[in-house]
Length: 282
Ligand SMILES: [Zn+2]
Image (cartoon, rainbow, N blue to C red; front, side):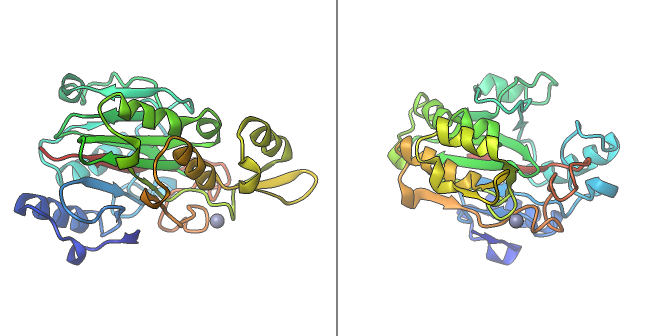
């Protein structure tokens, strides 16, 4: 995975190429694309390229973290201008493992305020973009191109321990996807370098997730470091996604807080949220 500028886009259709180039230009080339080839809208946005100020500087896309609503609206207009007429579907993320299945009808109502409580979104509908907001938690994007099914997951430690990746893959298979055809990409998130937790939480992972010990580094009698992306990788393998089809981003949001929102880097204070998105063009 690499940061992409507009010069890197090789899109299948002229319309897609235009949209991609505009996305790169309008958003300051800040999007990381797991799948830079055409035919699939996708990106892990960072914090650059928007108008928000202070701790929300600058591409905050959440209305629920204390930012000026007018600035958030301006950021959304900037993003949506890259995908004219395409609805974005978001959920009310609650650190659980519920998966919202988006129908064509839901997509048509995407601009309403009724966001279901869920931490995953899947759809077989085309012409709709699924979005997940994060600031240290792991955004996971999924696609089975043959089945035309996509998914987006929000995976913090609570979601990981609740098996969100497994549930996300299962929800996709209920729409016709096959795990051995699913490609997965994990976006910028707090890395194993920085995700320090109390030892009790590390022990809980060891008790509740088989194989978790391989992704935990005990640092002291009281603290440990957890590799959330490593745990998610194992969950995807358990769900029969093939290892070679999993793209784990190496970027740590806390280490790279100039480019990405990180709650830890902000010392737990308010911060903005960055968007990860995926969708199949019509
Ligand atoms: Zn780090």
